[in-house]
Structures are given as C-alpha cells and as structure tokens.
Image (cartoon, rainbow, N blue to C red; front, top):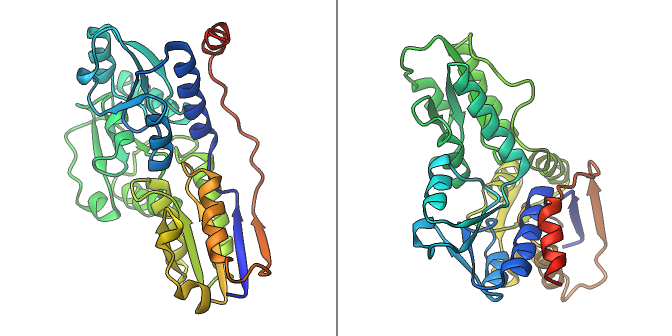
Length: 315
C-alpha cells in the first residue's frame, strides 16, 4: 500500500446523530431500563454501547412492560406499531429520522388523494415496513428493475412512487426508468426520497473509487446504506469489502493494493474508521492519507425543545 484515501463525507449522517442524541436524552429523563423498538441505528457497536447503559432493544412493543418508556428507532414505525404502543400505555419518544418522516407524510398524502403507490425498497427492511404500513392496502413494494418489469397492478386511477431513503441512486434510477416506461401516468415527487447523506456518501465513494485499487467500507452488514457504498465502488470496477473491525482486514490489502480507499456508512462511528486506519498503517506509519472531499455537509436535526428541557431538568 502506497496511498490511503479517505472519503468525505462519510460516517454519521444528521439522522443518525439525531437518533443517538434522542436516546441519550431519553436515558437522562427516564433512566434505565429504557426500551428501544428495533436497533436505534444499524450498527452493532452503537447498539452494544447503549445496551451497556441499560437500553433494551426489542422488535415488538408488546414485549415491553405496560407504562414503560420506548424510543422508536431512526427507521420509523407503522401506525400499527404506534397503536400497539398506545394500547400498552407506553411513553413514546420518537427518534425517527426527519427524512424518513417526510416519506411517511408523502405516503399519507397520496393515500388521502386516492393514489395507489409503488414503493422502491428492500423486502424486510424495517424502514420499508414502517412506510408501507401507512397505507398497506394502497402500496406495493418493488426491489429491483426486474420486479418493476414483472409488476402487475390492481385497477387504479392515480399512481405515485416513493423510495426508501438508503438506496443507491443508480438502482433507483434503473427501477424508476422501468416504471416510467410501463406506467407513463406515474406521479414522481419533485425530489426523490433518497436522503442527502446517502447521495453524498455515494458521490464521495464514486469519486474516490476511480483512484483506488481497493475500497474498504466500514459498516455493519445489516446497514443498507453501507452495503450500497460497497456496491457503488464495485460498479466502477473497484474491488470493495464491507468490514466492521480491524480483525477483518486481509493482510494482502496492505501489500497487494497500491491505493486503498476508506469510507463508512451513515451509522458508523468515526472511532471504528480510526481503528481500521490504525491497523492498515501499523507497519507503514508514514503512508500519506489523502482526503477526497466532494461536498461539505451542514445539515443538523435537533431534538424537540421539550425533550431537551426535560433532560436538563433531570440534571
């Protein structure tokens, strides 16, 4: 290895930082045990750090003792989950990413206006399940361009499309092209729902991969946006691997690849990136690190004033 490139932007997006801050505030207000519905973000290190502080992660709010506090994860939940929480008398603290909430609101608006909806997303992903729960009888999911090609729709007068926020720009464009061709009357939002951070991180890895022999994506295998970063690099003909810890580094990466690039998913702490860099440079500490920056991010989501004041009141 002769060069080490570092993509910018990378790592935590505003939505992840917001969700983590909301859980921190909820812990100050309610103390442990604090329940969180689903992993707050898709990174096992973040989850484990909260578990060490008394956070209990569950997949079903019906597992939570009645009257307990619960945080909804960054990925959002369906109306059905909200109703279940209400029936159990749970105190809800919502950490849903505002950009995911935007897609939920679009789904509700389209449903009120009588649209049938096509949702471009991944089967089984918690964000997809939450959004589709807003109008389960008026929405169908497509995962790939092939799905779009084979899609058969029920009778409808108006048709709209929504997308999961963490997809790759390319895969949405390919699927959207099929949908536009097959359903010329489809209504597309003025701006696609892929979030700014997903787009920015994919743009950075795209620029970096052109100069690399290998791209390492630091992130969890359960993270949709981390997997998309690896796929973007590979689509440009660059070998790419998704890892979460230094012990996953192949020794050959240090010797057989002149230029190595590193990026990280939107739910990956920077400390994990630093550990990977440290291991790569352990025997070659003088290798230059170059930053490949494509855009500067200044987006920030702030928790509600009420939540902040409650936490401050608890000292």
